[in-house]
Image (cartoon, rainbow, N blue to C red):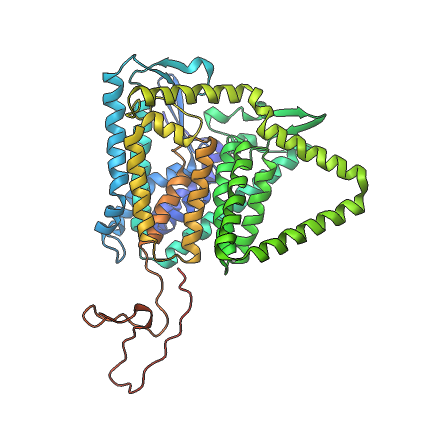
Length: 496
C-alpha cells in the first residue's frame, strides 16, 4: 500500500506537471524542493517499518526517465565520453561500495562491532542486513542522478544559470523558514510542524527540540526546514561559501550578496557547533585569500570600520548593556564548543566514531562494507564503510574536477564549486549523511560547469587547430576575407 499525506498533494502535483510538460525544468524544481528534506511526499509501508520518499528525492528519481523519454540523454553538444571520463572514479566508487556491502559483512561476519544507529543500544556485531541494501540503493540512485544532471546541463550556459538561480531561491527559503521557526518559538506563533517534519522519523521533532540553560539564559536551537541544526548548518555553509566567494570575487548580483548575509545570520542563530566551526574555517580561508591577493589593507579597513561601529554602540548603550552582550556571547560559545561535551549527543557521537575507526583499523583500511556502520561525520563515515580505497577513488574524482577547472572559473562556476566545498565541510565536521539530494545536485552542477566552456568574446571566432599553432589564444581572431583591416577584439570576463 502506497499513500501520501494530504498536504503532499500540491507538491506531487508540481512534480507531476513538471515531469509531464516541462521536464527540462525538473532540475530547477529539484533544487528548490531540496529545502524540504524531511517532508514526506509518499509513504511506503514495508514489513514492520514505514519508509518515506521526500519530494526532492522523488523529483530526482523522475529525472532519468524524463531525460531518456525526451532524448536528452545524448547530451547537448557535449560528448558523453567526456562526462563519463570525469565520472569514472565516482562510478568505480559506486561499484566498490555495492560489492563491499555484500562481501565484507559475509566474510567478516561477527568479527567487528558496528553502530546501526546513533544510539547507545545500536551497537551490534557485523552482519549483512537492511542498512547495506538501502545504502547501496541510495549510492546507485544518487550517483546516477548526478551524472544525469551533468548530461542535462553540460554545454548549456542558460540551463546552468537557471539551476543556480533555483539553488539560490532554495537558500533564501531555508533561511526564511529558519527565521520564522526562531520567532515562532520566541513569540508563540504557529509553526507547521506537521508539514515541515512529516517523515516518519521526524514527525515528533517538535517534542525533541533541545533547550539549554547556560549562565541563567535559556537558549533553544533552531531547525528551520531540516531535521536538526547540524543539517541546517551544512546546507547554509554551502550557500554561505558559494555566495561569499562570488561576492569577494566581484560582480555578484544583489541576490547573491543578500544570500551571503542571510546564510551567516542563520548559521549564528543555529547555536550549532557545526555552524560555528564552519564559520571559523571560512574566516581563516577569507584571511588567507586576502593575504594571497594582496588586499590586507582593505581587510584592515573593514575590520577598523566594524570595530568603530561596535565602539559607538558600546558608548551609546553603556556598561550594563555591554556586559550583558558579552555574557550572552560567552554563553553561546561555551554552549557550542564546551558544554555539549557533557551531553548525551556528544557521547553517542564519540561512541559511533570509535566503532567506525576501530573497524577501519582492524580491517587494515578496507572498511566494514558500505552501509555496515555509522559515523558522526562524513569523513569518519567514509573511513568506516568504504575504507582507504573509497577515499582514494573520491580523491581521484575531485582531482578530475580540479584539473578541468585549472584554467580559471567564472562567477557562477566559482559559486557552485564553493557551495559544494562548504557543504562537504559541514559534512566533514558532524553530518555523515551522504544521501542528501543537495550534495549530489551540487556534484552534478560542478561537473557540468567544469565541462562547459566560457562564452567567447563578441565578434571572435575560433581558429582551426592548424592555423592556431603559435598564436596566443586570447589574441587569436579569424578575420573574414572581405575585411581588409583587423577587427578589434574586446576582452571581457566570460560569464556562464
